[in-house]
Image 1 (cartoon, helix red, strand yellow):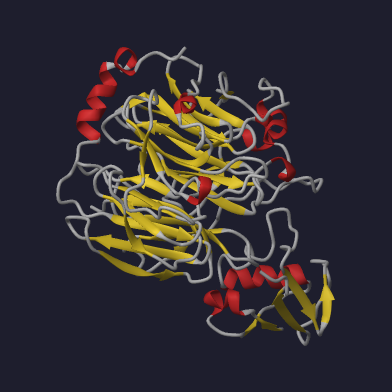
Image 2 (cartoon, chains in turn purple, red):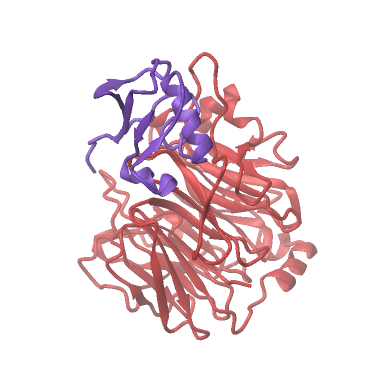
Length: 85
Length: 399
């Protein structure tokens, strides 16, 4: 699936759009981490929780559950939350 | 009562003073500056008179600590995060030309029941003993202790304290500590014994291990707490910065939320040497700096800790205070600093010393100024202005 990487994480990918595979959001993020080591921990903490200022949108819908199923034609947008500061 | 330095300093400590803390004339100093918006390296000339700025590195990243490994004189570790992303550690072996991120940054153990903690920031970095190359320790917020055995690439929880019920009680909650989270800091390794460790917690006191972290015990006798609280309760203790004297590892100084202290081991009693500070200034502050060769000499940077804790220089008149007699008396050292209307202060990791003779002192301010003294505090000059808020300053001497 196509994944849009936010600017703070493009030091890992070197580009805005990348491809990643998986049947769930968690699997897609795991695949991203295989391709770009370290990127997942910047978004998901050690207790498997989304970090406070990172948001995930699948086809425009906010997703808060890492087990959310996805298909290869979905589009994942990772966004840094508009949290000010 | 703490014993005097001359009586308590063992022969081994004197040998350490002669061998490890001797001034190295001509060694250039690099001042490592960690800020709220990135890192800068200031390369000094041999006389420490002119400084070349190198930075920003990682513009916009929050850098809590940037440390050079004294064991190889070339490895830099940086504790970093951004406003949105999780914490990490960066490593460079070419003074910042290239950086490599840790494969496994400090992280707490995962708890199956969802009660586990998450590292918000790695706050403090300490290279381990000279006989343990590539070993580092890290302190985090929420308070946790971590260790790397591969030069900072991978980190694991260290000791039992991160998940110990008693230590978790002493660590308190995020509401018990520093405004942006309680911090484990001041990780200190005894140069005579790699298994002899200390650390401080900004909520939770000072702790010591003599068995390489298998057991730790509080070291808080003599330390005061905020009025109305019980000083025997470990969690109420708030050390801000603890330093061991390189020339006498049995002596430590501490800047605490409630005063300046000294301890001379094997005594377990801290002595509030800040009582002799001028009353109008008080003995509240964050950094603590010790002399590399004279255990009777130390410096602090007092802060206004009255009423609502403004966290500014007292009366808007910033000054370093130094002692040459182990805290019996303190001298104001402010020549060259602003004489009035300067409302900045210095954070706990943002003041340090080099090993030259005379010792160079350095501090970075909350308003983004970098100051130094070539003569142990008698005269101050500004190296840089208009930097972001400075969180940490280290004086490194590359190989």
